Each structure stands twice: as structure tokens, then as C-alpha cells.
Length: 345
Image (cartoon, rainbow, N blue to C red; front, side, top):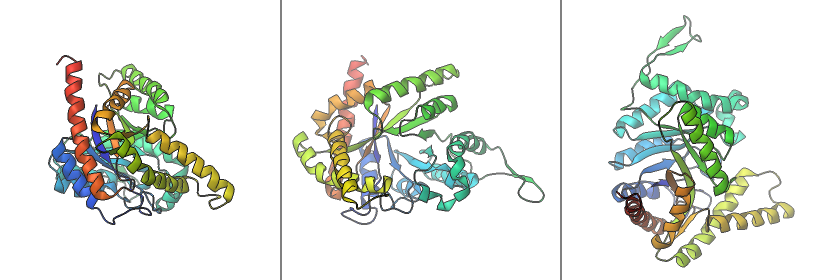
């Protein structure tokens, strides 16, 4: 199991504007041996709104790193013309010399579909169809259209440096895990609407579906987890709790804007956020010290997770988060050494 960075800042609670944390964090993660840097797509809301186009942030990360993977977590596939999506990520793949990867999602908020209103009703189908369509274009098959007169076929350029790996993003929907198995993509998920035992069952379904389709690939499950690593576990929890609570309040405002401001809604939201913060500061997150978090890695690994995408930019001071990235590199190294010993290698 490998560790990566995941960015999804809330601009309304950010302590520092701009992209210093993204770029400096990517440089540190590259040197520390982490697996990848994930950036999202979000529109029209401060929660994640600093990341409207992951191909742009991915290109920036490519320019300042040498070996680390550069991934979109996620691209809202129905918002984009297929050719534009294929072209942009082929560029990122070439800039990075074959390090690009994309997780495809149907789109999170109805507001996002201001960019493509007619796709809203078919958003799930479009996201699934995009997997094979992208693969065909990147293999060099022409894009065919009958919109132009006369109808024609068009070669999409540039070609990627290699096969660009794809994931499907899900909140825990079993049908998406099955679809990922059928299409032989990875899965990007989180623990907001599922717990670890449920995820373990979903991963089992995913891998069974891969095998049923004749694939010899083990698959790749990436789990996003809220992360902060400090000198001691107690210090990590104490420092992370206020920022994480504010961040989750903003997330609730994004997810359930209706009724915001009423006393009943406000009280219910605060209870939900307190419960969520306790989970992410405890068993469903990665908050602690290097030593204290090794058992947490065991739990996630035992659930079938191949990669932990560590969400680090939830409002802590950037310098503290950059120190956290260095400690994540230490944790990653400790885990790898321990895993090799366990496997007798």
C-alpha cells in the first residue's frame, strides 16, 4: 500500500491564498517517495473552488516534480467535450513523461452543470462511457462525428506518452465498484458515506468482477483520508480538530445548502460535523504520529486498499502541513520496510 497527497482546499477558511502548498507539497512528496498528487475539479463554490481544472494544476505539478504520479481526483466527465479531455490529459502525460492518471466522476453538484446543462440527466452513463472512449482516442482511433457537414473522422493529438490509467470515483455505490471491475479501472473512494467494513465488502465485489471478466490485474483501490501527522498523536489531534471542524462545516454547507441558517438546521449540522470529526480524527482518518499511525495503515491495507490519498489541505497553517508531508514520507518508508518483512522479502 502506498501513500499519496490529495488536495481539496476550502477557500473560505484558507489561511494563505494561492498555490504554495500545492507546489511545495508536491516537491516534498516527490523527494519523499510518495506515490502521487491528486487535485480535484470543483466549480462555483469556495469548498474546493480553487481547483476548477485538474489538468491545469496537474501541468503545474508536472513542471516542479520528477517522478511522482499526477492524478485528477476527479474529472467531472459530463462537463467536458471528450476530445478536449483526451487532448488536455495527453499533454499532461507528455509533460510529465508518462505520470498522468485520471479518476472520472459523474459530477457532484447541480451547479456544476451550468457548464453543460443537457448532460445532467445522463451524467452517470456519460462518466462510464468515457472510460472506453478515452482509451480508444489515446490508442489513436479517430474521433468520428456527424455534426459537421460532411461527416468525418478526426485524429486527436497529441498521443499520450503511454497508457493513462483510469479510476472511477464513488461515494460507496456498489454499482460503481462493479462497473470499475467490468471496465478494469481503478476505484477512488472515501469514508464519508461508508465505513471500513462496508468498503472491504465493496472491494471484494470489485475484485471478483475483475476476475469474472478474465482480468489478471489485481485492481487499484485508492481511499481518500483526512490526514495530519505531527510529533505525537495527542498533538496531531489537538492541532487538527479546529481546522477540520471548520472544514467539515463548509463541506456541509456545500452539500446541503437548503435550509442553511435556520436554528434547527444549524444544530443538526453541528452534531453531524462533531461526529464526522471524531471519525476522521480517529479510525476513519490518518491523524497522529508516525509511530501511532502504523496500525491504521494495517487496517486500511486489510480492507483491500492499495493507496491512501492523504487529504492535507483542510485549513491548517501551510508550514505545519508541509512538515506533515515530510512525516508522511517517513511513515511511507516505515510501512514499506515493515511490509517487506511481513511478506518475507
